Length: 271
Length: 315
Ligand SMILES: Nc1ncnc2c1ncn2[C@@H]1O[C@H](COP(=O)(O)OP(=O)(O)O)[C@@H](O)[C@H]1O
Ligand SMILES: [Mg+2]
Image 1 (cartoon, rainbow over the protein chains, first blue to last red):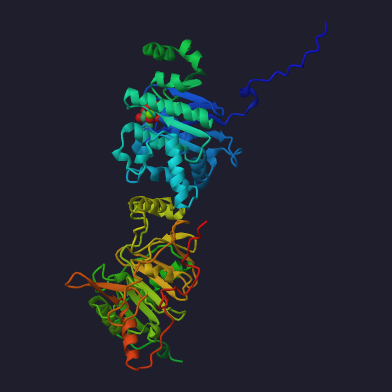
Image 2: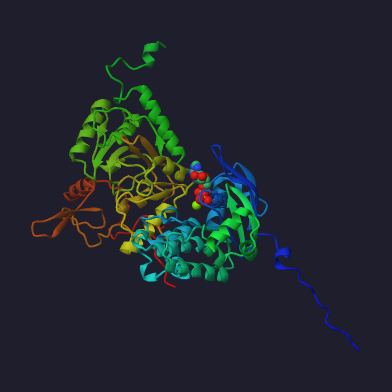
């Protein structure tokens, strides 16, 4: 018997080979005496979706603001595997470099459109501003880019020049999303992007998010207090309480077999 | 040499109205503004016998740099004879004894509200522009502190967004006077409320321009031979006011900045806004020999430099 089979090459799983896109180590921030983010460490791989859950006031939004370089930490370091900044602790960058990383490599969508949009500029202008900041000076190119970003986030293009305040909540979130992805960032941060929307609208926006994530291969961190939202999108789940991470694991694991009593409570409340 | 011969005889007031300390501060401010083209330098705006808003900023700059040998021209919207210009001129001459002129070419110092004369200014001349509102970012950022930070960072995205919004809404850029312009590739300034017609005159100008806002207490400058570029998209070139078909009723000339004068029948007549230019032209027509400097725009409306207005190439 001749067993001259082709040699089998065993590929290690992708996650073992690849370096994470995002590495944050022991982030801490205090507001006065309040320890709002406490020793939070996390990693995120390219094209991966991390869901963050936790009750109101547990520090989720603050964590996203830190990762968006909007605020200074009290301690901790933060690396993104992006061109030109691989070796840098991003918190230690100067104002200009921070802005550069923020505009070119990170997109963010807030729960409140007032935080993410200029209400006095047109929807397309809100998207175009990202390209303006990145140095685009051709009006036609700004128009085209705004159009294609808005189309990608499934925004009705006939309304692209409307002011955001004339739009419905769902459409406002789509403008925020178009703005966030306009420069094809590696990292997309979503802070309760569908909270406050009608359930049916919420489902549509989640569909868009899912599609974009697949097509662009973008890494996402999505914050929500709604486990249903997290379940539809996230590969892994991080549970926060009082600024601390109480549980972190694969989505199925955390949802099916929660370890921490707080998570058990959350999951059972949901079911 | 007796000490007395070194100082001027006693007089009841200091030369050019402002006390020496005030003038020294203003001159220092002016030097600083020249050193940092387009940067708004704060200064302690003094009391002068004019109400704020009537050219007190320009007046203080003028008083700080004027000397007995200067020849002064004061205009308001291009006009030597308006009440405001006449008042300022009378005050300055009575405080300094300088001679005055309406002839742009003969003036060494020109204080102006809202216009730059039509004849090309030269290195021996200084233009002082009265500025009501020096902050170009005010329309996009209400907080002065934030605007200052934006200047420091050369963060002018919001200005561009404003232009974008105008294109979206009106298919053209509707900013009229005070068109935001980038000075020396660094600071965006509001070139006082001069019309778009006048903004290119500041680019690589041979003369010094000082812009001074008395109420807002800030002063900035465009030194000679400095880049001044109005903000424009690469594919939407800067345009001046369209007055191609307008002819001046007094001189028959065209291609100079005109005032539009509505007539009873609803139509309009036009008149060159630079009254000194009109006066010279009419005197020349009557046979006087008059010296003109080359105008910024020739009779066909062509600008004297060819690196300012771009034509778009179709491709
Ligand atoms: N700018 C701030 N100043 C002071 N306290 C703040 C500020 N932002 C948030 N906090 C407090 O920090 C805690 C965490 O807030 P946040 O990150 O918004 O929580 P979450 O998004 O999980 O609801 C809360 O107790 C909140 O009151
Ligand atoms: Mg929150």
